[in-house]
Length: 539
Image (tube, rainbow, N blue to C red):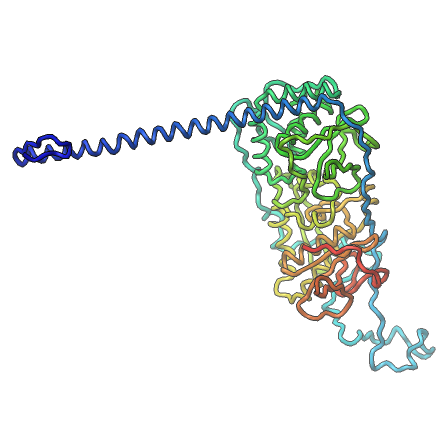
């Protein structure tokens, strides 16, 4: 008798009975395969969930131990540090921008006896036809207003393609509402939901013990969702690190029990430390300040070098003079991120449009501008940085959608030399000029959007805007030239251009100065013609 695969007799019946037996055997075989696999899969799922639970618990234990250790450290006596006066960088530019005067070159046909300035008595100068020097094409030169003429008083006639009613409507960036206990924070015109604890933070005093107790109290709260929400808002709005510092302050204003400046600063620094930023609390002049380690130079701010990093000192008291302060030397365990001032993403704050009443006008060219007031307020909080931070920053959607296309239309179909000439001439003539001290009483450098918001601009603002337009519209290399008390620009042409230039990285960059009114490309201000730039900034 045939044996089955299990070693038992196999009784063969009819054809139908045999098929039933085969199906039963197949079903048994399948169950023997599937059931162990299902059990194994369930075991794997259980093991993975247990792994995640353990890792989550390990993370919680790590955070608790880290916070407990830091709270204990905060109770120890803080050390006295001296502040170094902030680095100064002032580029005031000329009080009045100089105007270019065309060199007087006698035409070849002019006789030597006509060289004297005073013509002979018989000569009638007013009847002499005006002959331009050879090669000069008056009708192709950019229109240069006379010295006393105000460009903004020219007729305002925007071309049909530049009407402001074509401005795209930018809806606020949607922010997903967090789950659980939620509150709203106000931030530069927008309202954003974050997970907040019902308890308010109360800072009894700013002694070592008071700071340690407040840290312990806040660490016992479930702060992880709050940190996650803050980082998500940072990403959604395209904020740089400076924007995140201000966002943390806005959260501090919601969590402070008494709306006290020291309580706000404490919450702000707690969020920054838990987000990985290298900051320190400091006691200065009987209030709580903040030290921020930064990867860039910040001007006009006091600082101290601690543990190999440069910490800039920020007080919550406006215009406070700081000579010394108390802080601790130990770093928070997971705080390693240095403040990065670069604006590498487009900042998408709540939209509040502001249009210029009078368009910028030079000759036949005109630009109508619209900016976001909330973005202008945000930029106005920036500490003073090096120039590369400003011209490398991503402009707003309003600049890209409304302003930039008008500049592109100006140079459409022009040669590179003609296009650069048009852009240079427009910036020279259309923007009213004023030094930073005249306009703000302090040194301030504009991001490109700000040139279309503030009433006036100075040499560095014009140079930054000009180099950005040349690079963005014409795809040409452009650099900034820092002279003593002045900032100019230079452009690399792939053809020989006559005039003043600088050699940089084995390339000839032709000088273009947006503050030298009426000066053509290749013309340096006379006082800097024999001066080597102190620094050259390139993209």
